[in-house]
Length: 257
Image (cartoon, rainbow, N blue to C red; front, top):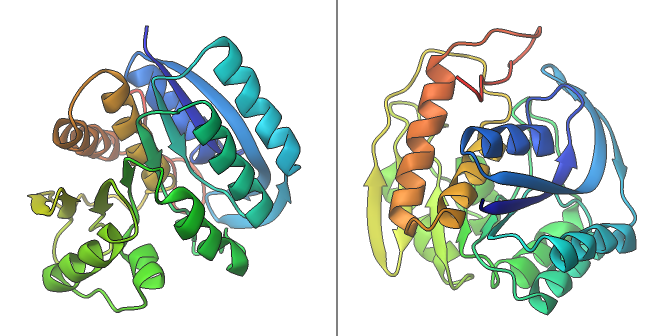
């Protein structure tokens, strides 16, 4: 059985964070493990509190996984301060981690901010270089590139700029586009558009967590980058089409549809 580690925050309402990641891994039939970077108090209506884990304890969790059940892929989600980012980078380098998928989580679906200001620079300088793929959405790409992304040309410009910061692939998710849901995979100086139809479902809590975990699962299973991304897109489309309707706000997906 292939193994995947998620390094991310916890969501008590089960729609995002490590809960979404582990559900996705179960759907992919891989063995899921987690190192928790923060406890959050959140639900479908917003994030009401964040309690960050001690950085050294995050490192100890990662050590325990790699020393006993080395993962075939690693997904990194919510990492909210510099100390945690630095220790994650150091541990992944120490253990020669492979198939690293970085979802630069900055803002929750509800609009709540999840990243300290000084942490963004640490993510780009410490983690981007180790990632095999980064998966920002349009809002995150705008913050990272300091440009406005209104359509396909802007997505391409942002992808090229982000590609210069990392040695791996860049996937800019098009879910916030006004007229489509096409994603852009920029890989080895080649642009690959992955078409997606906009699904009439307001319940999108945890979509970014789910997609990045699905990509990590694909890579762990031995698929190439493009196949992993396309399969992940297909998986999340199905989870959205299942139209689960829970909670008072932007509800979760049906990961095991």
